[in-house]
Amino acid sequence: MEPDEVLSRRAELSLQRIGHLAYVAKASSEMPIGALSLAIATEVETFTDHLLEDLIELSSLKSTGFGAQLVKSVGSQFYQSWPERKKWLKSFGVWVSPDREQELFSLADLRNSMAHGAGRLTKFQKREFSSQMSLESNLHKNLDFIVEGGQLHSGYKSMDYIVRVGRAYLTELDDKSCAKFPALRKASY
Image 1: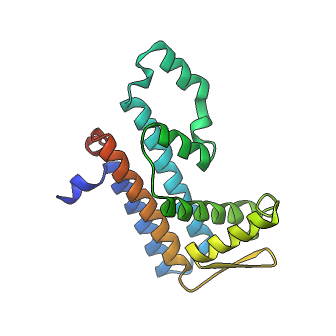
Image 2: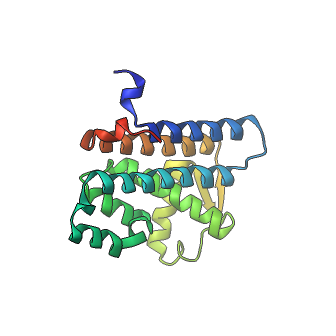
């Protein structure tokens, strides 16, 4: 297969942006790791949201009055959270492996800590001790971050892991989506 047959154009553009972010982060000290995690998590989230929009269009869901009303009623619920995105992707027969999903959820948790906790676990992330312990374990396993006293500390491999998680999730999601809806590969953006 030729490279342009493997990924959708939207995925290619998102992966280029992630590659550029990784390059800037590694080439200079101008992009702290928190900013990198925010940017990559946002890129993956934006890709997923656009993919959901494309799937709605390709599914002909809006071709009936009922379907159009359903989409209108659901509104932005498609994009409210990762569990919501997962639920709607599955309704189109598209999902990623549990390991890939857990890595992405770790990246989203890291992003939330950076955006809403200034590099610390948020109150929401600390609401239940067992959930917090699981979160801390996943942050370490998937992104090489440790948590001490609620403060997140990056490890030597954290930057590479953040980039890898974003790229791997996006690539697998695009592959699964294009396998189910081949027209996604041909769309131009």
